[in-house]
Length: 118
Image 1 (cartoon, rainbow, N blue to C red):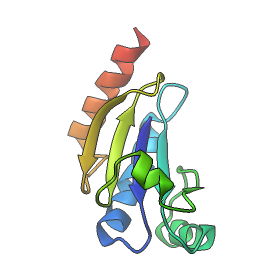
Image 2: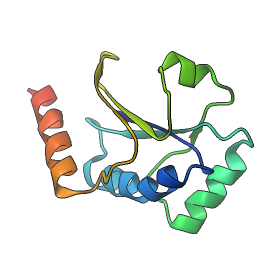
Image 3: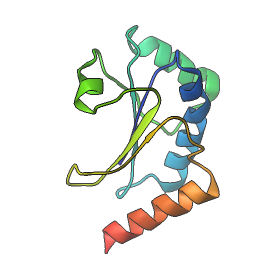
């Protein structure tokens, strides 16, 4: 699972969301899922509106209603993306934006998915 902590008011977050949507469309399934966790304090409506405006179709809506999620995940900036295995263990973390649908990112995540299947 790739957990991405983000907010609609964060410009780098907004830029990378379409790449996460494309990654979910390409690799999402029983062995991999992108979980975008919004920390928008205004609730789900700004997130829904952003999804509509940018054409996000493959990502579910998740929202943290307070700062406990950020504290629990030790997030110090946005966006932060954490790769977590089925046992809940962290396997990697990136603070800052990335192009998640790039050939390099897809190849690396695909390799991890295939490694975990064996």
